[in-house]
Amino acid sequence: MKTLNKIYFKNLFAMALISLLFGSCSNDDNQIIINPDDEVFYLPVVVHVMHKGESVGEGANLSEERIYRQIEILNEDYRRKFGTRGYNDHPDGGDSKIEFVLAKQDPNGNPINGINRIDQNKVDVPTLGYNTNHFAQYDYWDTSQYINIWTTALPEDSMCLALGLATGPDIDLPGAYLLAVPGPDDKEGIIISRYHFGESDIDCQARYGRTLTHEMGHYLGLLHPWAGGACETNDYCDDTPAVHKPVYNIPFTGCEGDPVMVNNYMNWSDDEVMNVFTNDQIARMHYVLKNHLGRHALLSSPALKSN
Ligand SMILES: [Zn+2]
Image (cartoon, rainbow, N blue to C red; front, side, top):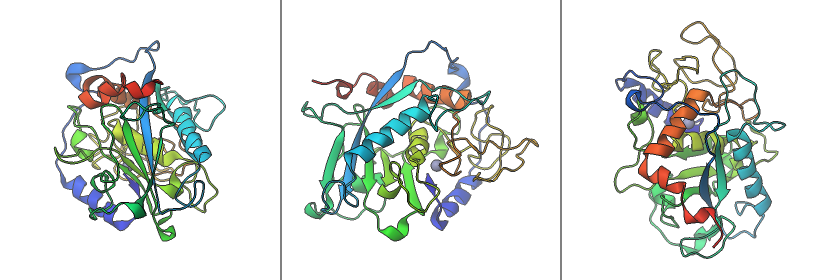
């Protein structure tokens, strides 16, 4: 979850009250050792562009270029690509070997570019709140074949306040209960405010497309580095310095007297400074891709290939 409003701080406080389990980053019984020769994990995404009748490229009806660039940024970040903003030479930083592909087929096997434009004015649905259940009413593709991303047509005064949110996987990793795990009837996916999807020159620290990088981390099982706020457990990743409260841009001393990792993607730091997924975080995402049924099925989705 990446928002800066009070409601979410309240949720965070509620989460901090929940008792915490102890454990390491990966599940102890099924620890994943990163193999540098690991194959690349390709994951198909569909971007449902929610708009209010604007022409393509205007307002909430985001341009193709902007969407393509957002997916490119996502891959620069997850692959730690040299020469891009996503590169780092941190000793604990890694290449996740995870890449995202705009779906090449829709659920009926028709060729597409991974972009599904929806005029909200033409669909009448009940208001269910700002969540995946609400947006799934407009369109929702099989989550074992697609990662559903909705870009939302929020009003301008929400800019820099509501950024994005994601559901998490139901998985036997320590701390997974701190993720927004959907119930049996809930819908999965990622919501990103259109202002924060892709690159732009908006007057906000979230303008380089890192909201999606962060939310995708949650979708693949990552917690905030401060997790529930307990120094002993945190995000269950030993190589992210323990921290007891949210990390923004400002460096400070964490639980063990070390500086916190300000540039980790799972913080609430500015887009401009974030460039690290650690090896333990990567191991956690790999565990999800190998052990969560729905996420694992994405790796062989027909949407990865043209028909
Ligand atoms: Zn978050």
